[in-house]
Image 1 (tube, rainbow, N blue to C red):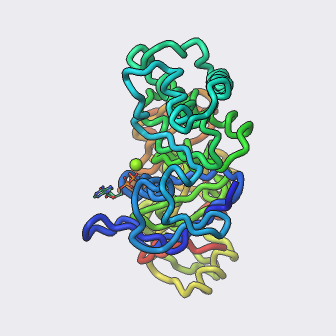
Image 2: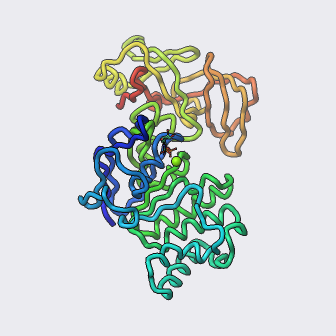
Image 3: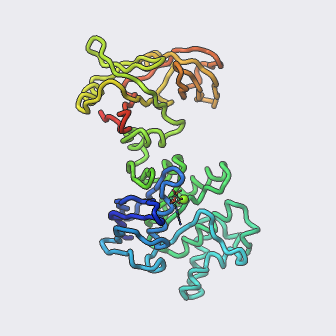
Amino acid sequence: MPQIVFEGVEKSFGTTRVLPPLDLTLDDGEFTVLVGPSGCGKSTTLRILAGLETLSGGEITFDGRPIGHLEPKERDIAMVFQDYALYPHMNVARNMSFALRLSRIPKAEIETRVHKAASMLNIDHLLDRKPAELSGGQRQRVAMGRALVRDAATFLFDEPLSNLDAKLRARMRTELAEMRDTIDKNMIYVTHDQVEAMTLGDRIVVMKDGRIQQQGTAEELFARPVNRFVAGFIGAPTMNILPARLYRDAEVLRVRGEGFDLPLTPAQDAALRAAGLEGAVEIGIRPSSFTTDPAGGAPIEMTVSVAEYLGAQSVLNTRVGPHEVLAEVASTRRLRSGERATFHVAPDDIMIFDPESGERIAT
Ligand SMILES: Nc1ncnc2c1ncn2[C@@H]1O[C@H](COP(=O)(O)OP(=O)(O)O)[C@@H](O)[C@H]1O
Ligand SMILES: [Mg+2]
C-alpha cells in the first residue's frame, strides 16, 4: 500500500475554484475520513485521486512517485460511488466481476474473489439477482463488493451510506467498522455525517470550502478543536456558542454575556493574555458539559423550553437570556417545560474563541 501525498493540489471548474492548494498525507494502511458540509470539495478530492478529474495544479504522489499523468485504471484504486452505479441488466455476480472480466482475469480466480467478497458482505444468496430486485442496503453492499473484488491497494468511498434510511445506516456503519479492521488497505471515506466520521476514521480530516480545517483522531477533534467551525461540526448535540465579554473581578478572569457570568481558570487567563485577546470573545460549551450536580462547577441559570427524555440522558432545549442553549444531562430529575433551574459547568470545559478569526484559544 502506498503512502499517498497531495502537494498543493488545486482544482477549478472554469473560473470556480473548488480546491485551493491542498496538502494532505494519507498514511499506509490508514482509514481516513474526509468530512465536511455538502459542497466543500470532498467528492472532487476523491475523483482527482481516482483520476476521474484532472488536476488544475500541484501533484499527487504514491510513495513519492507522481501519478497525475496516470489513467484511472493504472492507479490501483477502487471506488464506491454515492449512487452505486450498478449495471441494471447484470445480476449481482456479473456486476461484481465486471472489472475483473475486463482485465481478463482467469474465470476460476474471478469466482473465488466474488465468493469471498460476497460472503464477507453477506450477499452470497443474492448473486443471481438483478439490482432492481435488491433493497437499498443490498445494493450498497454490491457496490462495495464490486470494489473489494478488485483487490486494489486503495479504496475510496464516496458517501456510501447516504442513500440508506437511518436504521440501516447505523447498522452498515457498524459493519463497516468491523470490516475496516479486517481489510488491510488504504481506505479513504468521504461523508458529511460527523457521526460516521467519528465511528469509522482512524484519522479524520475536516474540510470547509476546499480547505482542511484540522486533522486528527475523533478524540482530538472533540477535545481540542482548532476553531469554532470544527468545534461546532464535531460532536452531537452541537456545541453551544455564545457571544461574551471578558472582565476581571478580584483577580479572577470571568466571562459574561446575556444571562450568564462564569469564572475562567488561571490557565485560560494565561492563554488569553498570551493571545492578546481581551474584551469580546465567543465561548463554547458542549451540551454534555452541563450538569445538575452542584459540585459540577460554576452555576448558570437556564429555563427549560423542551425536555427530550432519552432514558438515562435527557436533552434539554433551554434559554439562557436570549440564547437557545442545549444541555445533555443525566435524567436523575425529570425537568418540565418552562422550569427554571440552576445548572453547573466546569470552567475547564468552557472553550474560548477569537470572535474575529474563530480560532480557539488553546490552554
Ligand atoms: N463538474 C463540475 N463542474 C462545475 N462545478 C463543479 C463540478 N463538480 C463539482 N463542482 C462544484 O465544486 C464544489 C465541490 O463539489 P463536491 O466536491 O462535489 O463537494 P462535496 O462532495 O463536498 O459535496 C461544489 O460547489 C460543486 O458545485
Ligand atoms: Mg460529494
